[in-house]
Length: 490
Image (cartoon, rainbow, N blue to C red; front, side, top):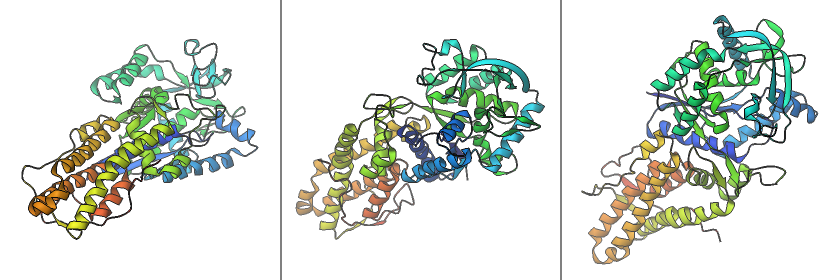
């Protein structure tokens, strides 16, 4: 059986889960389910929480809590989000886990042995929000454009550095040999330009006396690991590296990340892997940001979208559908409850829901709810380019192909008029129903990764076990009318 590994980034646990990370989870889940159910592969799907660093340390102090108690509380909220969105993860890793800490320390030792970690004094401008060093050219009016509400801090101390500059040539060579390493293409061009302009060594530790919340440096109790160095290692520690044989079975894997993580995921992390003597990641898939009604989400503006609330109000699959269909993969998107309702009524109620209701009623009323499947020559509906779109990380296009088939099925019913055929030509009616049920089987099959609960509900209506992509000859569909899948919202 083929092995497939996919992981999201690990969100900082310094705030409640928001719709932007919900998008990342859902996109990763589609890919994981596609490989598991449609391709029949053995899938490891990882997510988790990033729990170290000065930003989290300060938030815990502000809340009057011990850092560990603080991160325990927030980690539970992200676990609940995974459940609420019906995400099919196999692993949930926390960077405070004992095994992760041990893996990070072993990784450090390997980089140190290669001569890629050294100690030096330095002075930098630092954005606590990004947990990253900033150059003057990256600042706007002396502030980080991503976190303009936070003052840039000057840091001057002696730390350990990672020899990032050493990896310019190896990274560019790897990019050249792997032209689809980062998707979409324009993000790949962006990181290539960044590396081509030259790489600067960066600090990978902090003085423990100033900031104790981090993983201890092996052999030096006075320092702790910089949060980025520690957190990135989760992608392999979750597979049991360095001791578990599962690591060698599943690595390298696919990583999905937001555009603000482009540099860390596709350059810094890959250089770290090369330093430790490990294979680079298989692929980096980059998604955009989500705004709310055209505005950047902010607690002060009162427009933060809570994915728990939306999923509870409209159902998990409706939220999944909106995020996957409305927001082009790789690009920024906008969340609007009005647009969600429009999509719901137009695509789900009028399109898919109406199709299922019409066909189930016709078979239940006229065939006593039983249809023996016989292949109809010359009738073969397929979802074109579906696999290609998923492999190219164009999930909105793949889902769009399913909706083309839904539209074709509704059009076919309108053209054939089975409510007339059943009276005038029962054999023709039976043929029409057979073709339509075959189309519905395909719709359910391809819908599974995107809207798993909906796919199961439709399968139950038609007695379709979804064991095979192709319907076996003489398969008996036992159809039952049920409640409307998507009642219109007024």
